[in-house]
Length: 537
Image (cartoon, rainbow, N blue to C red; front, side):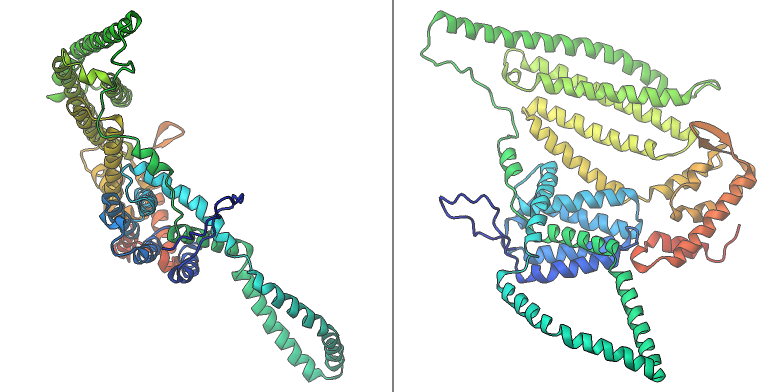
């Protein structure tokens, strides 16, 4: 893609940003993309249109890249490109909120890596894309200003237009006279004016202010996606960070032998030893405490756990899980704090400190397993939900984070390295979440006969693709205790009410699916509609 290099000459006091120079492909693709965006998204939900628009932007953006551009060798560029295509395909397949979030993040990160392919941190790629869009859109607006060469033509057209005022007035007078004198001419004129009025009405209906603003939004979005202004701020900021910790030397000249400098060196050595003793004592004490907690959890939760009839399972899972997760995060923060600088090079006590920190990290991994078991028992007795699935994905990130903490301990990794690896893992996990048909799996699991109490209100609020699963289990109305949550309290749902609400959802889904246009189609909804065709409760 071409970016203007016509910067102000040396010594110029102009601070204006250079104008963009668009390639021929960009000049054609930006208006076509805006029209395509308007056709796909006006009064439509995100679904198949996301995939079609994404393919257009990706094809144009990739064609614009030279064959040997550094973007092709960037791992982040290739990863986010695959994530963008996959998440857009999941939007056309499921149309879920997780897929939409993954698509937004992936496409923005890909634009950031296309702008600065040497970036490693996905967060910086995201910020680079946002910064480029903020700078690109105003510069594209400058291209809409008429060039100065058209000023003379406009003045000439206005001069001849004023000469036609008198002939048009005469034409209007004679038209009125003929319409009064000739009824056939009057009827013909009325038909012509009616037709013109219908055309004008249709024109303003299509090109109304909301339509025009939406088109401008699509134009700005397409321009920001296809044209990028180089943003070096975050790349320069990232270049200052290293993957590993370097030893920080004292800023005292080697030839300085005065007693105050000697005392300063002595105190600095004592400070490092004090920090070592504090870290050693903390890791020792918390290891003992965590060993007791893990022993209790292993004996209580890991083997043969069966809650008593009056046992508060909700408090056991919710409050206990949140507190344990917080303790794991605090533990990771403490390790990062002590191994942030020169304590990594304290050779006298470093091996013992590393092993004690490693034991603490491993004990936190055992604690994370206990959190997973708490969540498992809650699912076993009460059913699946979004947050309960989210706990497991968060624990996956926690295990990965603990593994990177071990890398920091034994390889002297920097905090930047840990942030980079964990942010990358979070992105991959987000794309993985977009590929799951979670609502279907939740509904099928909760409809098991082992769950005597069923939160049917939660299932009825799920997306339309879950309706065939609900319609296939009418026995729940008579064989299960149905409840729903209202204003924070659980209320019993009568079987007749549940059946009526399900029938209403089925009717609404059928009407919506028939009224939808092709940009709003998803494969999951089409499949659900086919399964429900001709079926009644």
